[in-house]
Image (tube, rainbow, N blue to C red; front, top):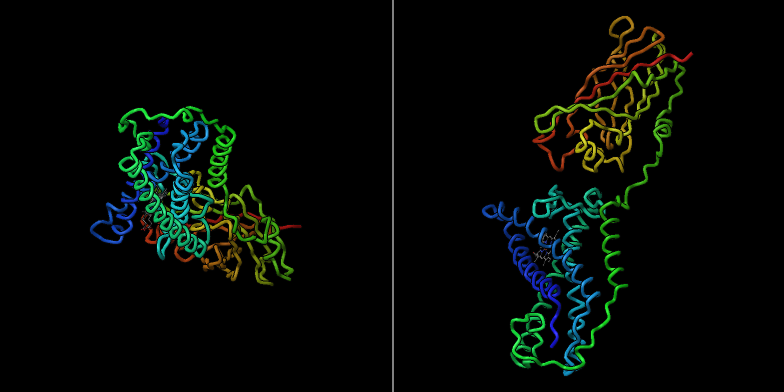
Length: 422
Ligand code: HEM
């Protein structure tokens, strides 16, 4: 009988070995992670499991393309119709599972959720590079991540059982052919078992490669990875405030007749600071707008509003800049703007006032005290340093609630210069 090509044989046994290994690792680690004595090893096993599984995905796609370009030798003509049908459907089911199991696992880990809690664990392919999360699922809402994690893990486990069943059927059929029927079928995939030539003239008719289907498979695989790793969440809520000016307009609701002041942007800044793994960082918001109404004689209360674009936070460190917009940090998809609203202005000295207000970030409001406002009647300066505990505004509280990496105390530094409008 005509054997499979060497590439097909190599891929078959490599994938089979990886699947069996991953079944064993998967069942072991799911249990071991819940026991203190084996937890550390289980954490390492999770990375091995994910790396082997993603390799199975890649090899299975390669195998599929190879099969389309180099069709398998035909089944022996003596095989009854039902057996041919069973063999073909088993092979199709194998491909579906070889792709479906790793994909469901990849989707599951992309949710960055396990049981009742979120987690931040990257997938490192054999510690060589980080595998991206699919469809930015890690940035979805907590409720969505939790339900997606449940669904994808259920699917993973169900498909795994189907795989086990199929493997048993497949092995039983191969052994039957080898030991009971002795028709040399197993030797097509394991040539060293070959006992003697039992060829049939029909078998030498080479099937035609299906280049079109192979091309489609490669295209679909690339398109999936491209779209899935670049797409942002489909469920990002509509912000309702497309531009920063519109957001400011929405907030300004005063009937105050106090003089209006115009911010001089190049001279003004709103900065933040803190420490990351013991190293100080200092950054700024590059986009913000302020509405300032203030009467130096305080005939009317001051009315000071600022809108800050959360996506404009930068400290120049690429890793920080790419993390800050994430859901766990500024969550810019749901909360594109932070707001400051003045609540009190108390005179302290000639032309000097202490400004208090409320800062709202991600829907959490904190009191801001300790800013100063100085004015000579034509120019004013609002400046000062204040601090907040990032726990109060739910910033990074999933991955680092204790401040082990990023300090809990975050500084806010304001220096705004404005000129009175004529
Ligand atoms: C050949 C491919 C794969 C096989 C045969 C496989 C098999 C398994 C098995 C048997 C389990 C245990 C299920 C249970 O407890 O009932 C499991 C769990 C798991 N698999 Fe896979 N898997 C594969 C690919 C992947 C991939 C590619 C990933 C992620 C990139 C992945 C991620 C996981 C995770 C995280 C768990 C643990 C679930 C938990 O306890 O939180 N798997 N897998």
